[in-house]
Image 1 (cartoon, one colour):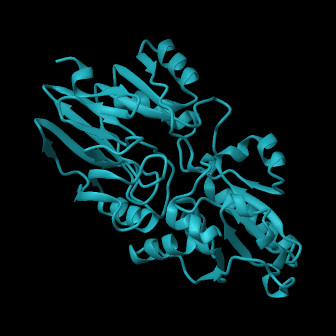
Image 2 (cartoon, one colour):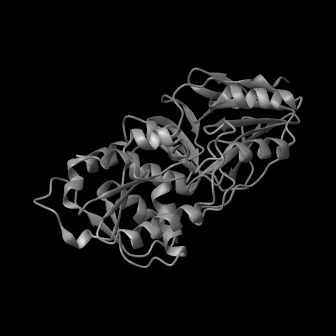
Image 3 (cartoon, one colour):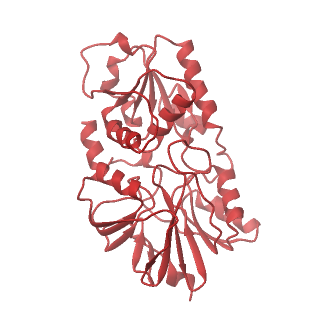
Length: 351
């Protein structure tokens, strides 16, 4: 059996000819296995979806209860057979419910990473390494320039800014799924016990995380829409919102707002300046260059496929180690913050 019989790249995403299923397909299909609930990987309309319980619950919140014809819970670590192919979901450390998908048949093991990180995150299960023959990895931050600092040190920068500018509201741009909850949890770990204010588009996912036992403390919703004037009650407070809302009319209620943005892209200062970000926070839910290369080494894979991101640099690095590698050039994947259209339920909250 050739690896392409077990898993191959198609215009609709990764497909298993032997198993008859897609992984994170771009368009509706008969059977989809979903690595995690970010909108560039988890799309509605499939006839059947298999994913972790948390991912299915998040998809229901983001896309509506009828997002798929049928759903099946994948228990992490539990092996399941699909048309003679063994499938196992293993924690990816990206966001709540995120998983790598291990695909095996006839002595060949392929691991599809989905999006993943090796850094500690109090809001989700940590990444688990799986030795394999072929490792299919993302490369969102697949350039040597991307080396992420400790997330706790970035949170300390935010708290230091609050002390220096107690009269300014601190608006922090965060992605609705994963980053918002991680930033809140890290603030709580750092001893910040004041209420944290959130844009309405973040509220339901924060409630879902809290229901899963993630300690977020007191969360207060800030009603979207135009304000009648500056509200001094927000001075010295932390307000989380989608990145696209930082420059919105919605922010006029806040006293002398200081704009911040939590993202791995804030390593690129030109991006921070372009967005008008005063306080860039380099907090990423993806592996940096060292994390990507370390993971490839540790899997022991003799072959690497790179799905999306900075593919060429990572493929070249593999070649220098004698690892066979190729880019898949999959279109339609990437950081959710770059997406132009939010999931349906969150789009309503932005109106």
